[in-house]
Length: 99
Image 1 (tube, helix red, strand yellow):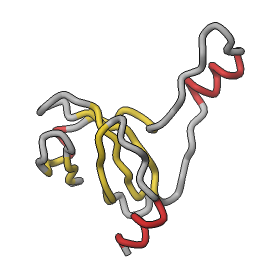
Image 2 (cartoon, helix red, strand yellow; image 1 turned 30 degrees about the vertical axis):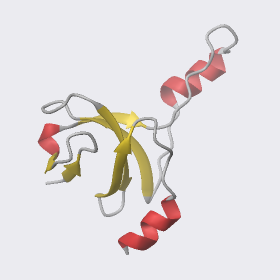
Image 3 (tube, rainbow, N blue to C red; image 1 turned 180 degrees about the vertical axis):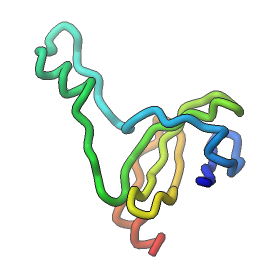
Image 4 (cartoon, one colour; image 1 turned 90 degrees about the vertical axis):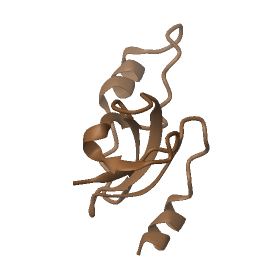
């Protein structure tokens, strides 16, 4: 079972408390100027990274807030979690620290 740290509650809890909400830091296109290809990319095209991957999660059975997490897709371990709006952490430094 995965253990996930909620950066708002400050607790580390089992994954059953949380729900995956997709890849993080995806910019929504401007509806006034977006092409069909822009919407296709926004809605359907995602990175399938091997290694450190930035994701969005929601603490549904706790505070109910969304937060971002960096998870290693090879080991399925969370490297860090951080609040929405905080800058993306340095992925190379996180990976080095985890090894």
